[in-house]
Image 1: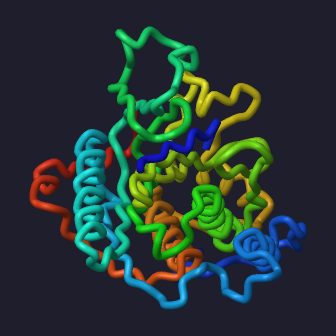
Image 2: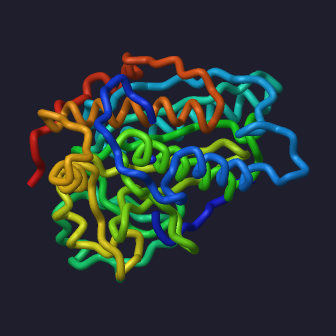
Image 3: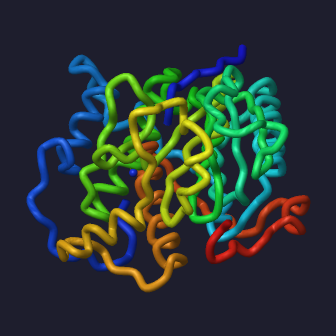
Length: 308
């Protein structure tokens, strides 16, 4: 069985000091967000905790968050891991969770049923490579300064519910933005992803095969936003795309922001926060791996300071 969840679109506690924060609205307060999410995950009849796991499991994390990995190679890597996990399930063997975290060189990706009407250029004369993938959702952009997370997890060990999974990915990002950056992060009814005000900071698009997930989420941290002007991101025309860096600069003027000296520092802070909140939401122990598979080693590139 394979399922595509089409989404019309597409949030941590690192080891850093936070500045004083103003009182938050009930919607943005982390504890209330967590409580609300817990109610979504488990109706009153359920006595389970945040996630349905009776036992905390291990998740191997391939940490490439500072590296630019070509999209096609990361895509092939995901599919290879999915095949391995399905083989383990078919053999009635334990199937652990995996998580890949990286950046991509500039690239546009389309979902299975995406339409080219959301491209503001001739596909034959694209400024960057274009890939049509098996994920759900419309066109989006990946590039340096954007942290991409590809959870390849066995939903049998969590909850076999695709809507639960999407809301869980959103919850990770919401907690990151709220807890670490004091941002009023939120969902938008009828859409998938995470916003701060009218700016969309994170896009989500997934594929599930035999209850094994792949593809995932992309969070704009220091991303150059100009490539988004050449598309209708996620097919949504009435909302903007933003990044954490620019919103923090606005918050800094209000003296209510975390401080960073370099873009790379902000990337590191965001990565640590994402990993922490992913472990909390999915109730897993993260085992980080800094060595990628051999076929990826020669493809690693140092991210440039700014694309385009």
